[in-house]
Length: 452
Ligand SMILES: *Cc1c(COP(=O)(O)O)cnc(C)c1O
Picture: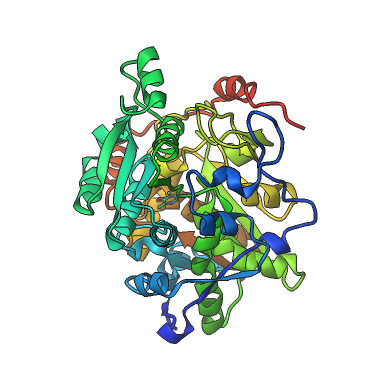
């Protein structure tokens, strides 16, 4: 029995899969201008994104060629392995077959370089000299630092201040790859100055850091902005994960009954899921989809499906998505990558149309699953990815009760080797479970703009 399925190099994907033309009728709605409430055209984004990426954002082509330079860089860590979790299956005493796709083998330790490299490439082609971006726990910032380094560009990372102080090694990683890392809020942007005037000791948030990076890009000619999740073009780039997985599952002689992933902004899950969703939307297969998120930031399970801003200071276009309100700041859970207030519009629309389900877990639940995984499958998973592991374990246990040999596939979006202090807290029994912050969510949801 092969535990690991590796794709031969000549079978690597050469195209990204764009789900837009396969989406349910009427499920895709345009972004709106925050001032006029009218749909915005592609030109509204030209101050911060290169035209090639804007084109991908609105593309109705089913497939988009991966540039050769990008394919070459992907080969540094792709294909990533598809692994059958035989030892976990045995520990769970389940007849289910559990497979996972392991994205932690990239240099930055997660799926994020799949889009960072593509975004750096198109910006370089457009003559952009520097990328401004934000990072929470540091996974996106380190991926963008790596990508800009590979293309000889500069990179400024606005890192949420509390993480800047708590995650010094992620910061070092970005600096090794040549990025300038600033603790956000900074006094370099008007957005940062505004926040600091109200609260000089602000710990920062992802929403604030996005406002700063967008402003930096919008006010400098040769500087662009890059976002690590949520947007259509980001999800598009991540489909290399799922296209590889489709081929690998075929090599292993199986097809998934259920595809699982964790969701922060939705990109790693979309990357794995969309090439299988293609089969469901076209009526070829009955596959199910389950997304896992934290109870402390329950965007899809408790949020509203509505037009909202992507950032705290209301400077981005309005997107229709699941949201907890643009000024919702979740508790400081260790799954930093899952602390965003909103969800990718493509994922939101699929949930709304009944093609995808979501579930939420507490910190202690996911660390328990992470430890069981590490003790059977050896890899120490990222806290974010552990939400997917928990969902896969639950499904495997359900299958045991039902005597069902179902095939479970999940995305292991990254490793947890920079998260050992979180494991330390769990093991010493000091990890806090945050209850569903109902009151706080009600307050911030009241501020979701009333559109259409
Ligand atoms: C950033 C991150 C996530 C969450 O982002 P998505 O866009 O939802 O994928 C999940 N896992 C890891 C390891 C991450 O770094």
